[in-house]
Image 1 (cartoon, rainbow, N blue to C red):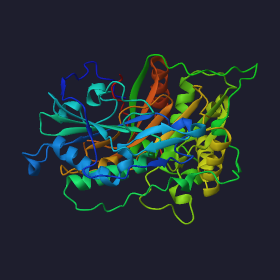
Image 2 (image 1 turned 180 degrees about the vertical axis):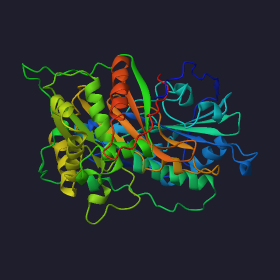
Image 3 (image 1 turned 45 degrees about the horizontal axis):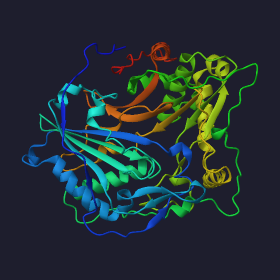
Image 4 (image 1 turned 45 degrees about the vertical axis):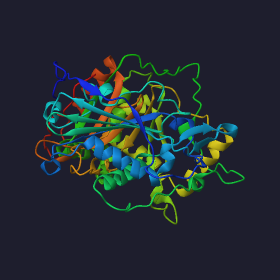
Length: 461
């Protein structure tokens, strides 16, 4: 297991004054409602995304910041709601006021090379607050820019593209669609290959609203007298990344019974992380823990959801068990629970969630307890595929884990082998226990007798 670096990378970032980039042409001045899935309380936060680009000889003499700035103005003509501001209407319903005010944009330079960030590129990244500057008074839900973009030019000729998204506007798939369109404009493509579709009413609750499923992901957790719950104690958290290559995934899969070995890599890694995290946070054996899976529901609709829709089309089914069961039963037990809740997602399930949001006023949230864990799979979203003319990114994903939310992202090692990396956020003592639990799991010998390489761990913040 690779130890965190004792000498963190430090560098200086020089920023230009933030500016607002408005659509390049006049756009409709109107108000658009978000869906009942979009404006739930659980999505009212900002998501930071980052991509790293190498020097491209064919683009010599071109400024990536200016290329992207001009492309952004062009892209906002079709994606003009991003240039607006959120308002709150009756009963807390969020409304996009399409004012055309623009997206916050920052040009910057850093005295560092891409190579100095190490290989492979893994979050958390040094000086991340400088690579995505939090412009004062810009991060609110209402009356603030819905996107903030910073392009930081590196002294090697590469650059870093960082973005902050108000999550109520889009999910990962929707954001990737917007970035793909932005890349097309940057490369001089005349029209978008995918036309954006708003149509947020498609995910509004039907009238009368029918809650047809039990949604335990939104339980209002009440502690029994005999088993007190553990409220989220996230003071002074640290961030680390854990990489899963072919060897690690093969070993974990070999620990499963034959009938489960065809599970997806996401199901396998999620079960592994859930078990290790649960053991690391030292909860009461009888306390309930839940693994909330972020499930993209686009393929669950009949007919299929329209191509071009860039709103939130995912739900959060929860696998629930006790600490004792997760600790004492084999890894396959957790895999089975995760497979079951993923399979429960249907078109009717999504409509039931929308109905729940309306019935309970959209203010319901995930239980604020450390026993709740959420993993979002970004391995197939395609952030790294965005091409502004400098080819695809060498890394594209979220900058950090966000509280109890971890992100699973694609990565490549020095040999070009594709794997997955999970970002984790925990208090420092729990993080050390987590790393140890994961190391011990990866030392288990599979039935075939093959050995696996140790997992690699990035530096902690």
